[in-house]
Length: 307
Image (tube, rainbow, N blue to C red; front, side):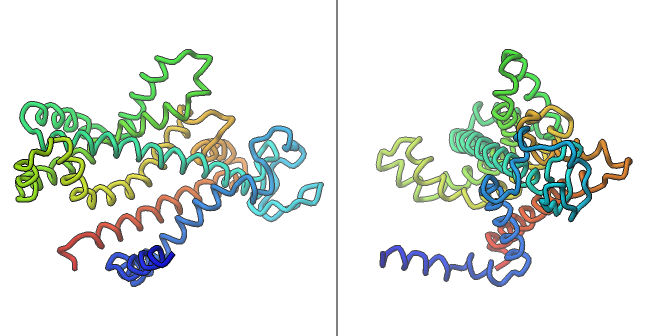
């Protein structure tokens, strides 16, 4: 327990924690991001309604304005949609799907990109040239187009009866494959610098294998920029998921995300039910902005030139 507490104290007194406490923007962004994630995780317990359970919906409660009460006396702070779905509950459950897809897609792209970047930077030669040319070609196209292409190819390999079952998995793979190149290019450059340093040469003299050197020596020293990219890329992944879902090629209607809610709300924008679009869109904007601001702070905090 004493060792655990001393570790927490050291972390709290570190330069990174001090920089975080001194930045009001970073504190606000971190608190907002944490609040969204905790609310999304606790959605089944704190949401007034299971928004995606058809048995809990009442069509007579449809199109209720914000802060209205239904016939049963329930208060709907964000109003309801055409099916009588409580929008506050729908946003909590939708954010749960969006954040989960974003985290898993970032993890997949980070593992793939860091692995390929390490191999390219440390091994070099034709392997480096092949990996970097593929990355250059991919980076010449917008990530959303790559994600759409991958989504279509992978979906085409799955039997139509299993499309809905594998929709989220396919979405994670599509977004992940669309963003690995940024990690690979960053890690490659750092690995090329690290492999020429004395500690790597000493490990070679000691007979360590190339895989062990990359894993134990080079990888820990290239993770700083990777964490910054991953934080910013989380916001991009959530927006890409929302874009794909808005286009109708993302998560299935039975598990709608923020993008699906925005697509549904867009249909009623000009008929006067503005809240059906406004609140899901506002939730997406606030979440993406908070994560982006957190990534900007982390980039500056880890940049030695700004210290």
